[in-house]
Image 1 (spheres, rainbow, N blue to C red):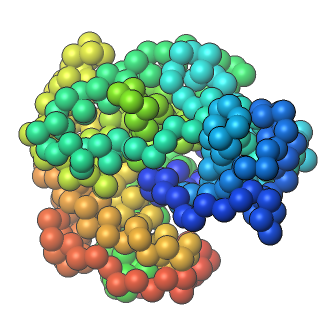
Image 2 (image 1 turned 180 degrees about the vertical axis):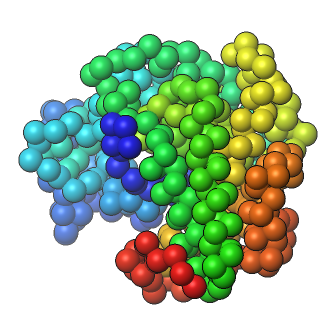
Length: 386
């Protein structure tokens, strides 16, 4: 792909940070085995005796998260991002993109200390309330106002990052045909084959043709900069302000991509009427044709939500986390909605294949059976025959 981008787990997104038990920071194993003292000393001056540590539930990547705090220091709490350290000669994409977004006036978490050599970042603690959580606590009557705010933040983000910055890695990579196709093949491998779906030679050709068509059409769409995973678990509330997180995989792609991530979110059952109204709201803010934008949204939704469906099974089979399986069906519900609105004869074969291969498609797909950790990537990657 153009300016190659690492394939990471941004697409199996972070669940809301939730704390496990709190314990003294120095309790064995001290600092949970992390070399935290140098980074904490930069922020706090020293590590006080009342300091405590909580492990937080994070994502499916190699990163893990903690909350560290002390009543005698400011800030009183910090979030620790723990990752595999490198030699310190290259900058983390998270750090690189964060600096760019902050300089452009986008509200992102502050980095208090960067100790890349030790595999530790100390970040601003944004609390625990995601956009998704507020949707559920406030109820559906509040959704139009909440989503309108998220759309306005997204439009502002897009405006602020339009001008290229050669120092930011996001402008050096893009959704090209190879990445789009890899994501679609993820569905064939994990959304079909890993669920014991037998694909005939004709089925394989149907998928090949539909995937090629989708890639060609999406590559021809108007382009822009994309966060890549602007959805309900990657927006945090600080009081009534939305803060954007999980931005390290930003890249150039279809201008509608982030809108798809938000309005075709597997974690939220957004009804079609509100979805259409919100597309129109973004179109008005961006001064673009709402009919064209809605068509772009449906086209990209087919690609992204097929990938997401496959990713939910991958999380169980390879990463050992069955929690994401329940979002397999909701992902395909958005595929069915988008295909129905497109009514594109080039995708009729794909729709028919899904109908006969996926029980309950599109609106009553059951949660796949958990077979946690029983598969390997090599077991399905590149295997196309039944």
